[in-house]
Length: 200
Image (cartoon, rainbow, N blue to C red):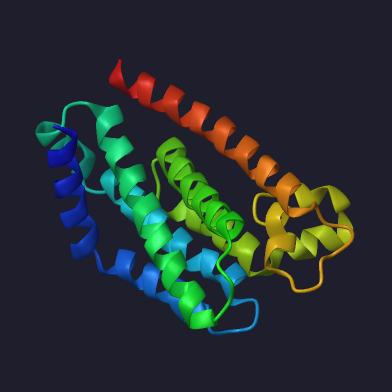
């Protein structure tokens, strides 16, 4: 059952040009300065579009006709997004000619999951794009210049993973990943509540 759902979701992913554009953007950013950090923005596009498309034009209802178990459906989506994230990440490391970093791949994965969970909670592909895309492209750093607590935002939490010279006022990589994990756990719990409520 899960395998069939995964195959169906893979076809949806491949046939959605925005999912592929997001992946290619992440890889393209890798060749730039701070490219591994900016690459997260491309993956946010991929995740937001892939999850959010279910809430457009009653597509979720159609998906549930072929896969009635909602949790299995979204579980397959998260599994596929995780696989895509790691393939994109490994390719990006090769292009950027940087040493492989498991912590960076974990950070990318957490950002992708956060985007997915925000889509599930808000039933939208626009909301996670608006929030996470703007944070990654500079809004969170602007907030940090005024409010130091902004270092706990999901993208800034792991900023030192991507810097050659660590920023002394930012969290260290381990702390950053733990903060991202807390964000993931909180939003995944909220997403489960929303999905459970929708089933009633």
